[in-house]
Image (tube, rainbow, N blue to C red):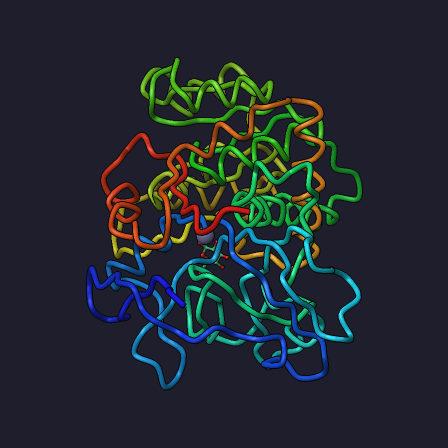
Length: 367
Ligand code: BGC
Ligand code: ZN
């Protein structure tokens, strides 16, 4: 069967690879789930992997099958599988366990080992192929009523984790009643984080470069949050209008903006960084001022990567609630489909060049 792969270390190496079809019996103990892939989304991580800035092949292989945002249908299950059955719509978590205590309790996303294993990204093959098999533990059911949001499950899990981690960490406050949140960036993570925060009842400002109206501002407004173009209003100006935010989620992909956010967070607040900035840019920051304000304000900086099964489940619940509260808004994120694994070049081209492509995904197979 066909798979879309890269040769890690070689820039622009995306190609089709012929691989063998997996089977439930590849997984010991009767807990394997064979999934027929319907759709796979791509994001900046896939772009960086193809630019050879990121990612590694599994040991013993030259190639890495890419794709970590998957949506499919269960084809067959091992005899001990209980959670899903053939015909169910599913997605899969991305990170697989290493050996740390956090991996052993199912929180692979919090591994304390330097090396991490991620399907489609690092040391494990991904989902951009016709079928994949995995342990039941890593397969998450998607309700049929959300099937039109298909490849958003994985990015949503990362947004859900970022917000959940912020609340977990703020348990340090004993009482924490955040009112104002800023989301920096209006890519998929920014938009999905906007939803998660709205559902928690916050006043949400989503900041992005483009001047409204545009698709992103339409989605933000559809989620009853406020879209702010930084071309018109700086973060500092916004603070004079809203007061300092209690929570900031940075999803800009710009380390400069991630640091700029440090100058605006409110007292006792939390700033969450979610971008994987693969470059090596450095900037000057007003370090004395930031240091002083952060100490005097008991402020917290939190990094958040990946997501475990629990975050997928939270994210899926929020998508379901989001559809009830803001019907037909979230599907607007899914802007750029390409048809079939053969279209991998077009997929990469859209991902790299098309600035209007909010979400590129591959229709791998029809249902
Ligand atoms: C993926 C995460 C992953 C991260 C770092 C992101 O694009 O969505 O699941 O942990 O890259 O590799
Ligand atoms: Zn990703």
